[in-house]
Image (cartoon, rainbow, N blue to C red; front, side, top):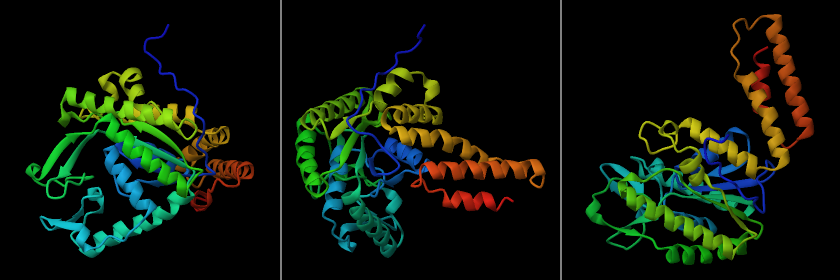
Length: 327
């Protein structure tokens, strides 16, 4: 007997592997999946502009990566003693203009090189609501707590999102024809938009992604993170304390569904063995000088050696050094 509605995930025309570079851009959920990929030693470049929420800002970030131009002081503004960029999340902000620009330009040119070589991209749209700076009409990636009167708030239409992204994808594939893109919609509810406003926003994102999938069926796919959260994990026990973000248990569950449906067979095999090795590495013994613990360490090193023989590209150099120090 089933007590919940299980989401069926259609087979994607491509998979994710440890052998390929993956770029992730978008909302907090991109951060969640990106960190899981990093923990499991995938080659990732996660949010080079910081967390981005709307499709227009994400598109703008990709355009800048495809044709990078160095940010200067003219691209920043100072508010309450801190330098910010309207194209970046506040993690790039700094009391020092020099430091702010160094952080921005370092990631920009590093990621611009990566995006030309990467074979996979994960894009997480969080909201279709955007804020335009009244003085320029530009969609900002982050308002940085400036007064609301400085911005016009707008709900992007499905047509606007599709038109911008069709043009962008064609430009992306001109520079990197091997790139495959996985779209997701963030399960995080944007409650500041109101319950109805949040639903309108998510609907616009879902319809736009569906249109893009139909336009480019072999090069794009969709992972139903939003639907899994709304239907399989519909109880509030799967939410964080704010009742809006997924709890750690929910993130772990969605990651497991992602891994089962989107990872290559070799990467799934690596994950199963790596999970046991990680537990062994993190194990804290009561008697670290005992012969039993020394045998345990030797067995762990042997498991790592065998895993490396099967998958030479899976780099455990740091972990091997770490565990050898425990002898």
